[in-house]
Length: 196
Image (cartoon, rainbow, N blue to C red):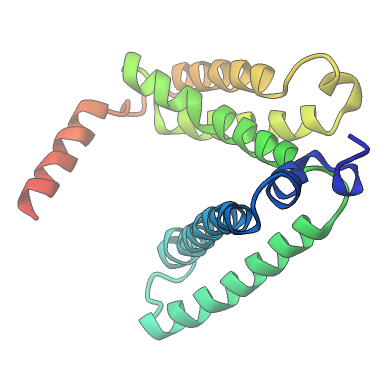
């Protein structure tokens, strides 16, 4: 570990490429790693920007927003997200691996139970799905930032269980609402694609 630059295990590829390989081959390997990183980050930035501007702002906040306004807002959000990403990358608090693990834990706890329940159970309601998503995300964050809990088990496990239970309980309590008909949604999606 001490031979690594700044003792950082994430720099092992750079060390191997620069010290153990031909400079041309090492340069190609590092260029490949950087290009993979750049292709991923630009798609993540575009997806984040689109989700905030189209899925949230235009769908909920201002349904009559003009295309010009959406484009201007998209540019602002992309710059803000880029600055936040650069700040996180430059901080020495944690490795990228742990950020990714935490993010996937939150995503898995928020959306995993919904995917599984909607596939195997017809009783899920929209409120059950909503409460399941929110509770999964909240439990992940609380578990992660509570040292005594974090040392016991990976936060995805309890958050996933809690989100599943919350989804089932709330769906049962709101069963008078129309359950989500997943088969009809897929059939409608297939019809929509065929129409295109």
